[in-house]
Image (cartoon, rainbow, N blue to C red):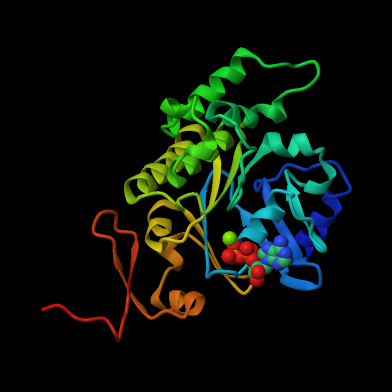
Length: 286
Ligand SMILES: Nc1ncnc2c1ncn2[C@@H]1O[C@H](COP(=O)(O)OP(=O)(O)O)[C@@H](O)[C@H]1O
Ligand SMILES: [Mg+2]
């Protein structure tokens, strides 16, 4: 379809009832920034349904800013985020929270809160005056805690957990929300290597077994290439490349995005791209 035609149709969809669309979440020509500082301009991003999408890019390139916009925490200065074909700003907040769960890059728990109570807050968007805490809420909380391995921590104070434990509790809260779309900002930060792999496996399960759309900002390129079926590479607030890792990852791309020389070889476990950084200064062994 002609790109401009598609865009003008998107703009119309914001005003008219949602049309059937194969992309539930789309950023359409966003201008994003803070006060007078523009971080992204004309940023257009599709999150393909049912994918595990990874976002990569150097520090401060605007990954978290994009995630905030996609989850409606940050209003664009122009352009629109379209959720199910309708401008996200036009939904009631609770409705957005029933469709999109966000794990922000850093979160602060209310003081003195216990693990099970924090995870239970993920059920808030499902509650109302007429719909109080139910058995299903209880089950969703228990399942989310089991999936993230925090069941044994349920009575502990969140303040007193290790960074890695706390991270898993936050993820449990997002899972308890039971949204079809899950956005995770650096979910593997603070986790040791075994827990990183466990979490990525969990994201893949969520994606493949329950059909959820998972979007994660990941710093470890090799993890991103191994787990994601759709990759968005960003630099300076813009998308440099998007597509399947096997199709788009090259040494040139890594150079362009990170200013890093590298070799790209096949991951011996999975056959996905594996980045081996070049280093003039490294000491060669042997
Ligand atoms: N709340 C804020 N107020 C002002 N500037 C911000 C704020 N959050 C982020 N920025 C700036 O926006 C740019 C992009 O930040 P961010 O989206 O967090 O990058 P990334 O997640 O890719 O590391 C950075 O230059 C950062 O300093
Ligand atoms: Mg960030």
